[in-house]
Amino acid sequence: MIQNGGKRQVGFRYISVVEDYFTGFIMHCKGWISVYFDPSKPALIPQLYLIRGISLYPEVSSPFFVVFLFIFLSAQLKHVQEVFLTGHSIRTWSNEQRMWMMKALTSYLFAGLEVVMEKIGLTKTSFLPTNKVDDDQQTKCYQMGIYNFKAPARFMVPLCSLYMLNVGSLIIGFGRIMQSQKWGEMLLQAFIPLFATVLHFPLLEGMVLRKDKGRVSPSVSWLSVVISTIFLSVASLLSNYY
Picture 1: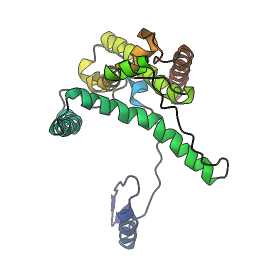
Picture 2: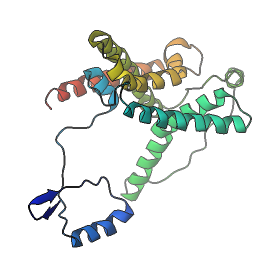
Picture 3: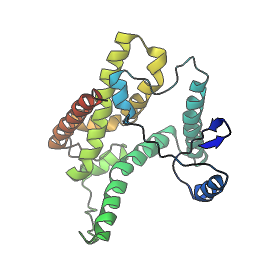
Picture 4: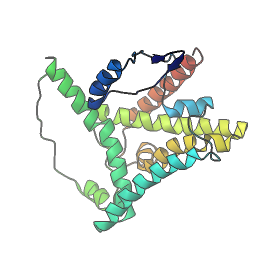
């Protein structure tokens, strides 16, 4: 903010990148005053706003809708192009998309926690080799492209909980959209959990339909349903007070 005679000029700057420190010094030399602004409205995940019927994205009729659509399609089409150039099919694209999201919620999450705990002296890094012996059923599932979800519960619970959160918000959100008839206003927002639900259908298949050894453990499935239900309920209650 800078005062220029009888006029006041206000500017906004988000986050903090390396250049901003030098830029901020120059702006202060020119008379700008930094003001910390922290909105009271909490920023929650889009799925919860879908349940509440609150729009976060432009309507279909808005020119800005094309911007969001272009960003999503260009990123996905670029990935598809790279897959095709390496001689693979669209199935490889879907598998890579799934694995990227799965690793973000399991491998990267726990690796980050392990590093933090090691730095503060709560644990020591250890390496335990996993069992590489495959049985006939596991080999057959691998050749058929069927996922093996026989993993520790601490890896599967966050993954399944987030998936059930998307499924729950998709069902409740579409019900609200049909009731309010806000298709143009909520279409882009409803697409987010729809895309995640369809893309990760093998996870739902492992939780509900499959009966082989590579399925998701029933205890993990029920625990994920309970966690996602509690999260949706608490978030809905808290959103009423803001």
